[in-house]
Length: 325
Image (cartoon, rainbow, N blue to C red; front, side, top):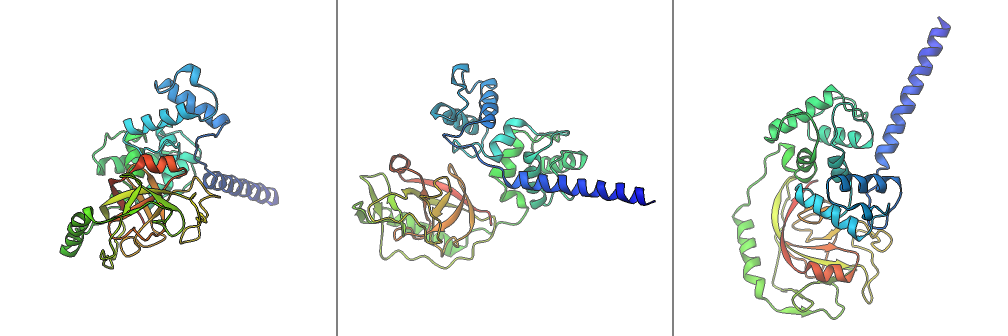
């Protein structure tokens, strides 16, 4: 009897150890960025080459410019977040998760499906019948091909359109919202502030196209808006960098962008998107609303990028922004 209890105790301990390892592995998932190298990069390049996005002589085991371009093209072709960074969405899409798969990406898939109220079992990183059933339900709900396999299309909707997938009603813009959007259009030709070192964001310098200028209007007021989770809106986007004369590189919420150059951060009008919100920006990806700016009022958003060249290249454009949480 004692031996049986000891064996049972050992079995339970091993189970908890394995579960803890799965949790640690899932939490330590790292995106693959330009300059990264190692076994994960080797696998990534091999997958991209097999799909025709890289040539054999480009398999360098380091994410160089050609690999970034290949990642971006794959993302664009499959409707994923196009940022040249291989994260959970992109790598999960490449692996094509299905019954029998195990590991970090399955763990993340289960976690997402659980958040979206499709998966109601243990999040253990093992793609079993219950995970398959959850994927099938998700695919049926979103009119995808129903096969229980989490491929590119399923990953696109789980990550890219996750706010819409939460099955929560999205409030239509009221008349005051529409009036504010019209006001923004009317102000499109307002006076410009020349880019002489004045930051549009509190800390980093905002850099835009149109002769390196930013549009601003002192009369432009934004109403206090209660943003509902899942709300999607069209916004005018510009880009900024953490390196300019007199810039500290620290955002309004205390994020050190120079110490964390890969961090996705956007500057917002807190009356439109509360600071600390997690948002999805078309063409940029998931980000934290962690900064503000003197010229960022109303339906405008400023995206942090690493270099001035990237900021200049981004220019000014209209993007769809979704408040995730």
